[in-house]
Length: 287
Ligand SMILES: [Zn+2]
Image (cartoon, rainbow, N blue to C red):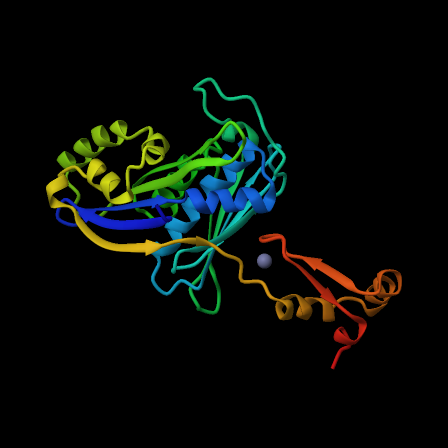
């Protein structure tokens, strides 16, 4: 099954449900960054959450989410847009801690305490910025707190990554349920019970349960689900030779000259996709 995201409403439009299947995206990120299991889980959760947050915003040009913790992973960064494209990186990809007391990846321990910073470029003069303290560094609770606190939209968030014994990604995905104005107490109570039922989200994904099936499983009244949109989603980088050339031109000519003298060319590597670009002396002359 190809990665995709399903968007639906339920209970007369008083709740909105997003479910993403991101197994291929997280596996691609693992390969690019050569992450070890705890880092794979952490980066995968941030990529999945950022993707889902990205498609929620009309007019969004670019969404940047930074999980800035004081743990061994260092900072985790993800950038997405409204069309379901994401890329990301983790400062220290070689992190593999013992499982926590629940037998899960100790993402919270590896992230540590710190802040979640959200930057939304909506094409206006200044981007919107929201900062909230990390709740436990497990990423899902941090996203939930952000939606509730910073966007006043009470939300339940689940994000998960399952890793095979050889370190490759077995399954990855996420779920966000948002309570919209007019949501009844009864709906909330039903929803809480349903959410407990699908606590093993990634196991279900690994078994082949689809995002639309997961939407139906979580909806308080499954017969009243309205599917709005199915969005194909990808890990993709938008870097280019031209894009890296600009910043090189503004560097100190002496410094660039030294590199050219020693190596004959300047090499730049993109942090998000590992692509390398080369520049010869005559390509770096200011016009
Ligand atoms: Zn790139």
